[in-house]
Length: 205
Image (cartoon, rainbow, N blue to C red; front, side, top):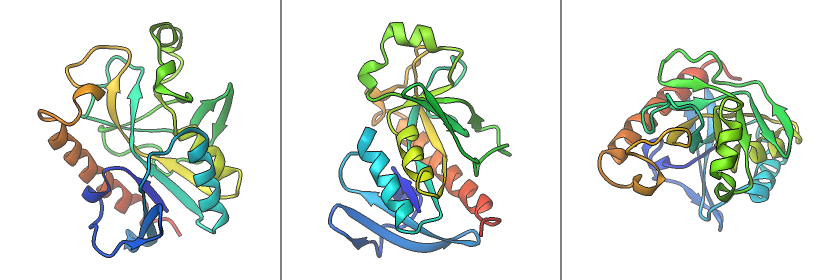
């Protein structure tokens, strides 16, 4: 199961079946049969936890999450690199998993520790100063989805676009991500994600 944003750049939107709040499509990617999932409404926090739990309980052996997140590392330039990792800290506890994308073969993919917050509203200046150096990435979803999936016996991994940087000001951030050259940069990164998925799923059974 692959839960993704920007999904039109990863798979053709033809032949998706409608399931009310969701749309899904099955295809072969690499050597694996995968199901792409489109969620019609926004989801985060506790909602995404239960989404992951439901997918695992329905028999999907692995859930791969593709989206975007913020970086706490000053050197990470938005919309030029991808993020992945094998852990997230949520509510003071660290959850870990076996990462499908560990030891990336491309310099455009960066591994790092992640922290999950309930909302971006908690990413204050004081919070940022106290957490730079502790974590590489932050968003509201990854830890929640991971715990929902892992606690129900399935595997989890994520591969996200670094969309903004909390540690250093860049010209590109969440306020202008639909303008200028950002959409074109995102397309290139989605193509890279598709390539990496095809390569890694060759060895997954």
